[in-house]
Image (cartoon, rainbow, N blue to C red; front, side, top):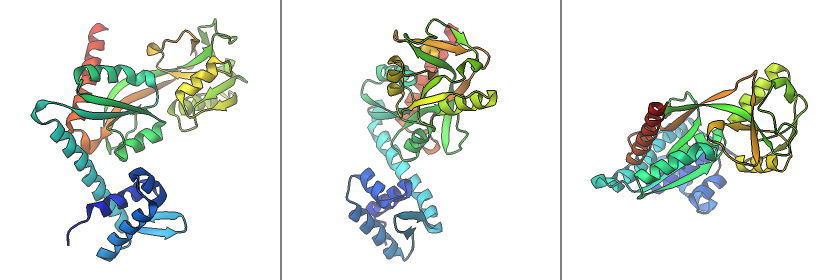
Length: 295
């Protein structure tokens, strides 16, 4: 009784996304087709893979066990394709990078592109949850993200990034270089969504200091946040000031309350030997070695 891999792929998509509708969107096929293939897989082996109640879909014990296996299967499939493309030492194909700020990723993507011009570099942005999910769902090969401490991922340290404040040129603080955390009391704040790691760290420090701010705008895009700040809607937070240059803004430090996020570059642990991923990590390590030698 041979395995139907199309049925497995449909099951895997439903298990990852938690619904038949989302799985259909991810595979670019109709929902009835997904339902038919998953049902056929269950009937063929006389098993139940999902508990279904209306729109609620949950994995059964057997479903959980199968998902562990399909994760390995489709991870190996992606690695096999990359290995074949890299045959003969000619690295080519595509690398997909996920990050939550363009400032972080631009230098790495550029350095990798110069080293491996035959590899197309694709970059997508999201919050920490989306970056982690992109790796798990094989939508990204590597991600630049805060320290996770999750054994499902292989990571290397990247840098400790400082959180600063960002204001537009018309803001009352535009001539200041630093403030105290108490100065933020009652200030208008523009931020990313609550899942953003910068916001979580920032909010934790505000809470510990007993400081209350006015949240006037929340946007699911770092670029949109900066545009809102440039238009004078409020104060924003900025990660890794060292690489940020834009004449429309002023960067201000919170002198009495340093805030940091330890950044890592990660991939799925099973994919760390994939040629294009190994090459990316090697480029990053050389960049780090070069920065250390300069310092």
